[in-house]
Image 1 (cartoon, rainbow, N blue to C red):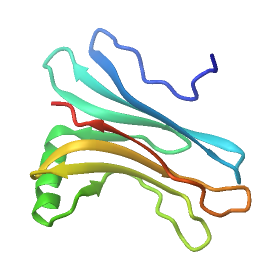
Image 2 (cartoon, rainbow, N blue to C red; image 1 turned 30 degrees about the vertical axis):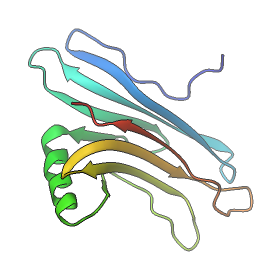
Image 3 (tube, helix red, strand yellow; image 1 turned 60 degrees about the vertical axis):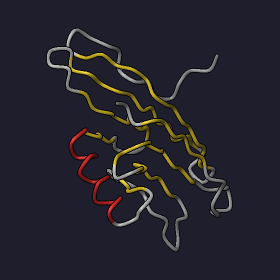
Image 4 (cartoon, helix red, strand yellow; image 1 turned 90 degrees about the vertical axis):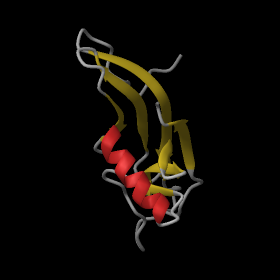
Length: 138
């Protein structure tokens, strides 16, 4: 079995970790892989929880419950199916790469998180997009 490019931390006395999704994608221009792991982190002392995405080659992102609730409410009121969160990469004229952390909205509440990745073929053009979605933890 191949070695994982990135892994979630292990549970400890202060946090319980549950892996929610994993995704990897190859960028031919860099001849390297991007990798992502999403996990739910629960503080064992008070039960507070959050979702985190750890990324290889990019900064990770944290989804705090209250911030997601407020942003989902706003996106829902505007009729948007999702909003992006964290440090995303948007395509430009010279670089078609796109990495987005999307929070999907249903009835004004967060319903799913999606890791969306589109990297490059060897000629620099956009490769096929890859994504993984998982339910917003309740």
